[in-house]
Image (cartoon, rainbow, N blue to C red; front, side, top):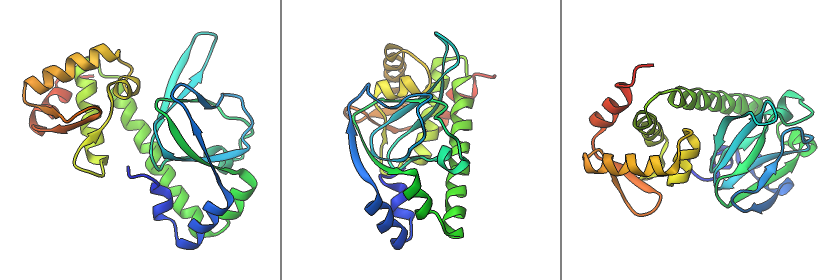
Length: 217
């Protein structure tokens, strides 16, 4: 997904209002944008970076519920009238985020056109979450990696898939060492080619799809 996906697709009038009412903040890798149970006082648009959504169901029980990156938003709670966030957000990378008070956000989305636009975005986001969950439940590490690469190849805006080892590991619940080892084997087998740090290109879609599909759920 391209940077500022939401802003780039908004009508110019709404885009100008969004920027006027919002402020930009920066966080470091490992920091939290907000925690589970915090009051929903703002909505967030990720300008740059990757965020992991984690829900705590007990003292030591944590569940990954989503991943967000450039151009994606956190605003469901404001739309649904929730009072508190049901998950925490930890930064997988350094990030920059546009943040806007809920009261101002309500003014920005006052038109029916904007509501339809947001519903479409939320539907797309739900599809993304469901697809990632389908990938995570695969048994074999190489199958999870292959599924994730197939998924991100469709979503990429440029020539290469841009994912670091730790981002891949976080997204599909694997150790970084395992991801590194499996990617090296995929490159040796002529399935992918790594282009510097955090970039890779699919060489054989047939082999990649076969890797994903062999692991029957």
